[in-house]
Structure formats: structure tokens, C-alpha cells
Amino acid sequence: MTERQLEVLRVAYLRGFYEWPRESTGQEVADALGVSQPTVNRHLRASQRKLLELLLDEDRAGGYTRNPRSRDPVHT
Image (tube, rainbow, N blue to C red; front, side, top):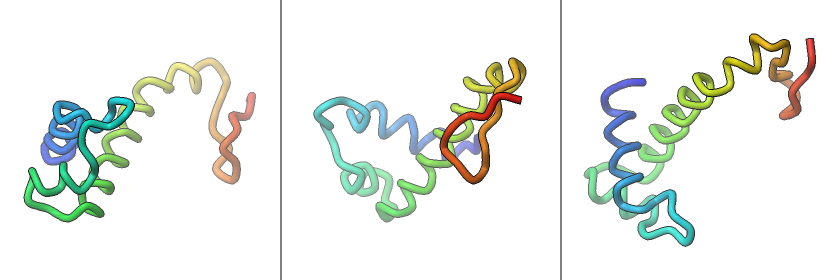
């Protein structure tokens, strides 16, 4: 994860972006960082993907992998 991705993730988290209901919107996070909302979305998706890869790599070791054409795991 890049430093910028971590910064965006941290700001979003600390501003309540991941709370339910949200305490701040993607646009508010973007405004706080001085970037556009699509830029925030791109950084968040990239950082979330990297965190999920770390978390779910155990599944791959256990014989499960993600089918690239489907959202469903495939047992190998």
C-alpha cells in the first residue's frame, strides 16, 4: 500500500466514513484531502483490495481462490 493510499484510508476512517450511518461522505473526505472524490474512491479501493488480499491469502493457501470471472470462490 502506498503512503498516499494509507493516508486517504486513515482520513476516511478517522472522519467516520466507515461508520453506519456515515459521519462523512466521500466528497467530505476528498475536500479534507484537497482532491476529487473519484481520486479518494480510487485510493480507497486500492487500499481495501490490498488489505483484503492480506486477510484472505489464508483462504488461497487453504485451497480457495477467486474465480476471475465470478465473485464466488472456487475450491481448487
